[in-house]
Length: 270
Image (cartoon, rainbow, N blue to C red):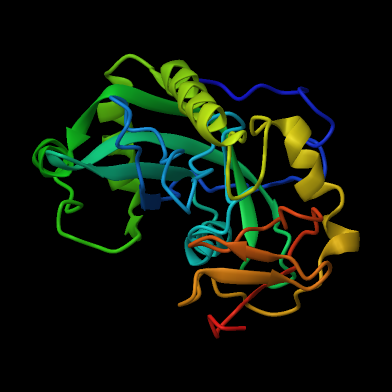
């Protein structure tokens, strides 16, 4: 699937996006994400209670634009000028390879520190029949089935072999997007919101991305590395004082829409 250009004034290649300029021998990463138990396709966990997921964001072919997931990996992609981001998730049969992004652009995130980047792809491919990581190792000579947490660095040869394996199957990215829409409508039916924690009634889109890309320079308040989790699963907005309950840190306050304003509540009684 090719990324759509010109959909919105903030979509790449427009500013604030910058070219990664990956070298010809650039490697990449394998990233683990939560998939939805209510879906036959391994799409992200849209219905996960108290922790709806926005990545991988197939709708915009971005990663880290709307979420705070895998901050160190996103930083690593930019520092290494990585060309590929592969995705795997846990299903009943074990960890499986589901698809990849071909990365091309990056920009700063809403948190004002050197590790918060958003990534965007110019193409992606996700498959209907995911491949067990043990089978990936057998076919590609890789070593990705050995358990790891969150992410794993891949060599140029690893990336080429794994991309070839996925490219041999029909592209089901459009089916993933349709399935995400179905799960979002399920959320909306039972809660009134497509994304409950965000109090968000619309889909993720480049129009929605304007809030995260255009306003970030005037609304960002954080000046240091920000933790993605807190023992209390509670966050307080420094702008409006609203308390948010969610397992992972949100980039946008659901109450006032402030970006980068949520701070961890360390004491549950606070």
